[in-house]
Length: 423
Image 1 (cartoon, rainbow, N blue to C red):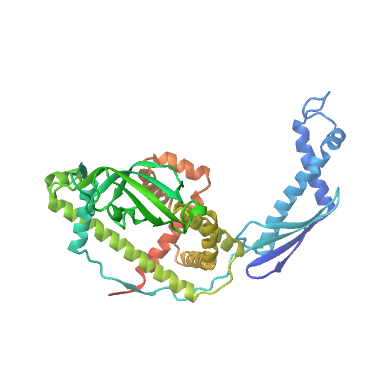
Image 2: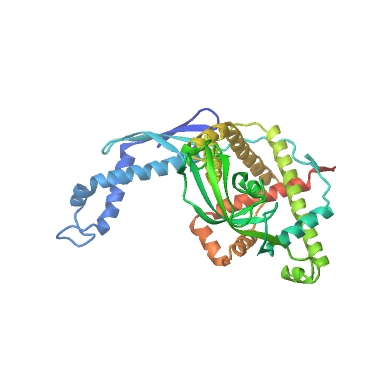
């Protein structure tokens, strides 16, 4: 086998590989021998048919299989010979292959970049002093009370914060634009109601009917109505007021605590833990930004493209969930293109930097750590450890999980070694 490597732009390399007709013929012969063992030829038991009959019947099949095998094997051999470390699957092209003749082809592949590490110990980061204010605890208490709120009938008119149970129809120029929605709950609030119509219900009583003029948003799900003026007809069927429970022993016990004071302390601890996690994320983001700024090197185009697609798909899903139509989604994606491309490049760059740091600092992830992470995931989805471990194994996800945990441990190491200034 002959091979040579050519450097293309960035981290791309092109391997040119040639094999003689003798090598090809030997591979075809071996494959025909394998076929002979199981081939069903009339008049012969499996394995006993003459080779000339096997060759005549299966020669084309053997040639194709030989080509595929030789390309795969010679590609791996050429990688080792030239010390090429692939970061992507190869793009095979210019295959030249004839019956009993030479086989040649080219393989383009992205390689891992060379990362010359800059200083990564004592990276300066800023952290905010973490405190929990009394108002945050009271806000959390109100959210707990809201979990056990009761909605009771109310006599008289709707006030701000009340709820109307209503039938709602919508029209444009007198023509319905959607099916009538019955028993729809609407809070008397501009912020917490569909298109702010809740504010218009203040002062209405049970049995009242009101037409509310609104301008549909540009991201209205049905694009032909986007931005148009519509009329929502609201018929009040019930008036409800939300009653919150008292902050007492009964409420505390519903949350697994003995007293309101114990509940407040539990909520304080939860808020503190969340703030500390957020601050840790902020500091790690500062570390990654510092590393990205200091390290410039070519990136594998295929990895960037793959990461860019992931980010684009995620953005499209989020826009779809917000109810945007295809045209609006396409326009938003075009606006996001440059920023998401930059984000994709940053993610790939920091992956290689952290990978190089992990090698230098001997950061490893044990099987016990992988199993511990899978156990936590299983608990969160109410699955058994065995079920989740089997899924990750069968879908070839263990390697990706290893890299994810190693990256996290490397960031933990860098944060531990960082120069932290608290403000």
